[in-house]
Image (cartoon, rainbow, N blue to C red; front, side, top):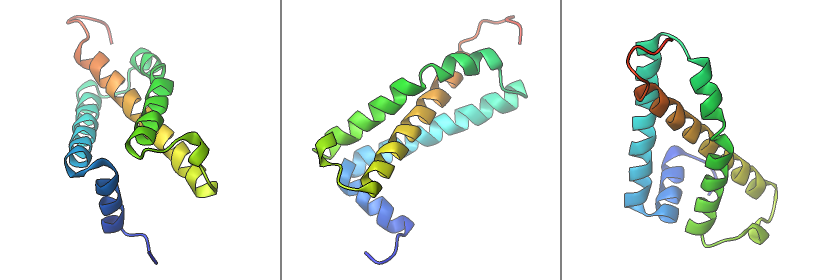
Length: 118
């Protein structure tokens, strides 16, 4: 592999997760992102208390993402061999933390009671 392209990344992720699971994760990520954008447009701002509560879920999302990838790849933490492995592990954690934070924010925004102050 001489160059890193989007097609190469998609092929690698499909090999790791399987085609159905990979595309299901892509669809879910797009849906969460669109829901977040909808909430931002609807509310015209980011609600501080929702964001503060949503950020509490970030460590859970980061750890869950790392453990999920470790399980899917049949590897463990002892298999981390070099700097790129550590970078991928950290980026996986950041992606999981961000994803669960967005999801928690959207869920709070959609489930708020009618008439609740903004």
